[in-house]
Amino acid sequence: MAIEIKRKPDEPINVFLYRFNKQVQQSGVLGTVKRSRFFQSEPNRRQRRSSAIYRAKIRKDIHKLKKAGVLKGTEDIKFIKKLLRNPKKQSF
Image 1 (cartoon, rainbow, N blue to C red):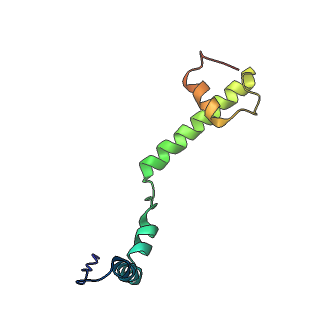
Image 2: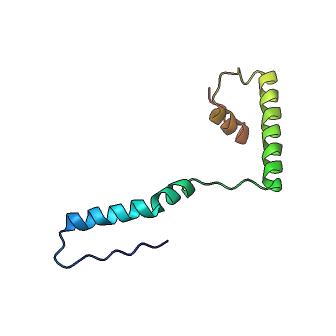
Image 3: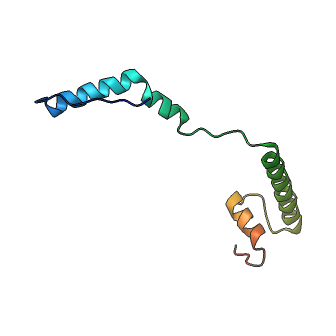
């Protein structure tokens, strides 16, 4: 998939760049790179399971905090997770 373009003798740089850009567009390299740039593979079974266990634990802990009156339900999820990590430092 390598593109090799050599500059001709006494060829102006703008003409060379035009020719280079045209060759890159025609080869389809940019399209391939853009498609694969943010590709994420599917998580395997172990990752899905551990993620589901973590979400269930967080839901259970949030439910406990709401019952205790610590949370009112309008807090940000980042704040809740920070509170769950260190419950002694409660700053409201």
